[in-house]
Length: 228
Image: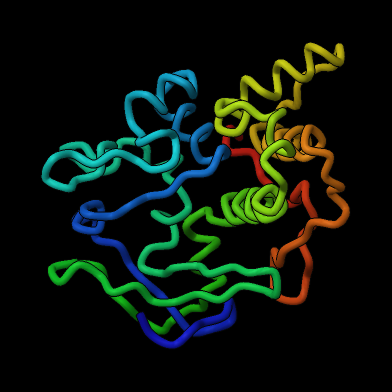
């Protein structure tokens, strides 16, 4: 890794689809990413978790280290790929005071082309990263609060409540007699709100940085609809 970058930093990268970056990586997933992958695979989230993840937290790897979702012609879920895959060869580091980006050391035989004829913000837009970053920020802000709760403070949350946003949101809306949100992004916002409410958290007190100088409050705004 090299010196940190901001969204305004000069950066460009042209992927050559060599798929060498799709090996020997530990790809962590949040509930929004699980839902996107389930949409791509046309599976319920619970089945996707069982078939393609390790405990719903990381994508599985084949015995040779290859991503379980890599096919003969490349990524089989490319349109719905997780944030870390979209950002590569950048990494994004977020804390309560802001964000920074770092260049990740590529595979030694990568065919991708690095350049300086753009900005980090351009690359993020080209990769469809903004809704994934908004979701990551929202769940990160929530998890920071959940992490400091006493054990009995988490007793209202089951494992699949945390992981399966679609089922959790649908059940909550049925209980309330409400129509479920239409887009997956709205459902993610609703999911964060449900989890926080069950643990007695005040969402207005939870914030991270969504864009430089702009605090992002949970539930996170700014999602776009991937089904459009």
